[in-house]
Amino acid sequence: QVQLVESGGGLVQAGGSLRLSCAASGRAFSSYAMAWFRQAPGKEREFVASMGWGVFYADSVKGRFTISRDDAKNMVYLKMNSLKPEDTAVYYCAATLGVRIGVADDYPYWGQGTQVTVSS
Image 1 (tube, one colour):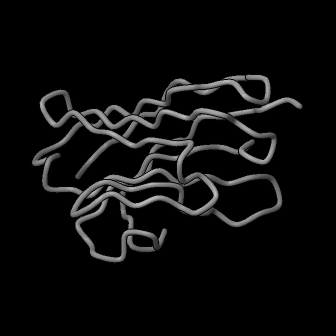
Image 2 (image 1 turned 120 degrees about the horizontal axis):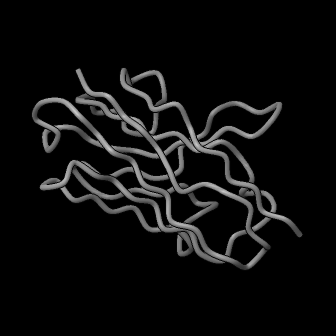
């Protein structure tokens, strides 16, 4: 079992930056691939970035977002630069032992989400 709690969301102007944090509790945190997903109103949850057996990003955030993790602290981060209004969404941290890292259904553990709003 892994429990996840996100923080760091907020309101930011276009072009600004935010850093999201995800605190994990439970055993063997380093064994899990960790990911960030997001869900905008009226849209399906979409993959943003993951770090486990490699680092992967959605094309829409590549070059602007950076995922990182500190296994000693059981923390995962998402640094978001050059934010755009279309980045507005609830951002979720997720954990999996699976291999389909971009597939939300393969993640059994989720945080409650943190709202990111980017104004134009």
